[in-house]
Length: 349
Image 1: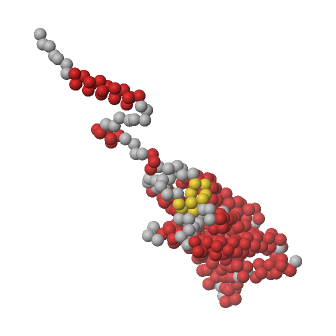
Image 2 (image 1 turned 120 degrees about the horizontal axis):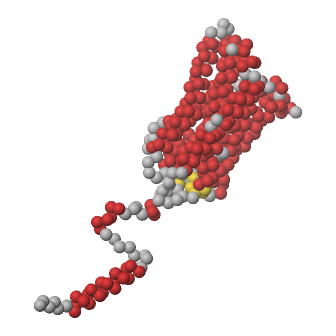
């Protein structure tokens, strides 16, 4: 008969281990860790932050220029509102300007006011109050409206090029081809065709998880600065950006180039220098606006990323969102005799 004697020390140790195990089981905040299962653990959620607001840095790195830029941008905004508003009014009121060309110009002037108002008031508020915070919903709304107005401007410039093509290359059929019904349909298409696409695109961008910093190194909520803050792989979103740029920028730009290549070839065939100068003067203003706007937009969204891309993006964005809308009324009014005459009659009233 085998008798096993128990060791008192081992019994005490066993009871202590059992009590320690019961304490661990009863404590909700203590987790048992097994070295062999570390590969199944999820990454800590502290690394992923659900951002509810962003910070628009703008020119935060140049505080000595804050009030100077506030005054400069405020003056530019007033000029844009007054000049584009004046062109919009005179094209509606003056009977001599009741033609398709000026119908498109009035819509273009109104569009410029909307386009600038999507970004510039918030920029002025940030510079004046030094509070650069913007909520996620406000940021998405700002980007969506900026994209919609920018896409509409690209399409409207293409329609204006088509109007010039018909007027110069087919002058006898111009009143029939560009009647009021067709003009209304073209303008309505420019304003509405991109709305569902760009709303869905904005939703896709802001559905991405954002991690780390919430600082946007830009003046407003633009596509590329927002994508830089997104977590994970954004390759598909970047490809979608390039697709939209091709559809709303490159396709209208190539259409405009095709229209003006035919216009210029026809102008060069005209017999007299006077007729060539008169024909070219009717489309030179529009051509200048096209080169300025599309040139800056293509450089911004289709150039490869470089080490200094963020600063370059900010400079280019100021160019096509503020400076070009300020210059456009001057380009159209100073180079168009009909607009100058209508402006003089408007000011003399």
